Image (cartoon, rainbow, N blue to C red):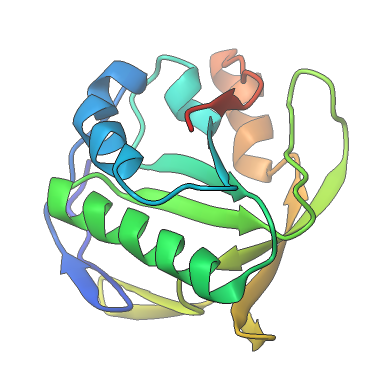
Length: 164
């Protein structure tokens, strides 16, 4: 992976591991499991399930809308990822909905994010707006990068995988 300096909320890192499959993030998952997940679930999604090299670990949280608890889980997962040099792209699904590439065609999901702004190599990216104590954004599926990987590489995306 080309080195990218990422600043996200309280965390900054410029050293990131390339990952491939859930076994490559086993230590990250083990640390995340120690958090208080009572009433919440965590799913792995995206390229980590396709056994290809990737640069982020996509995770979706579901559970009741309790802003303080959601923000705690988002922050702690991001912190663990930065500590382990694995970029954890974690979001909370406000509706509890997940995109399943094996059965869904087009879907828009509203997410809560750890923070509304990320800086990558000095360039700021604003992607969420604060509302009701959460930083909200909408994502349309399938994403263009997903369609490109499917067309160009023949990549097969799998259904969300329940971790917790």
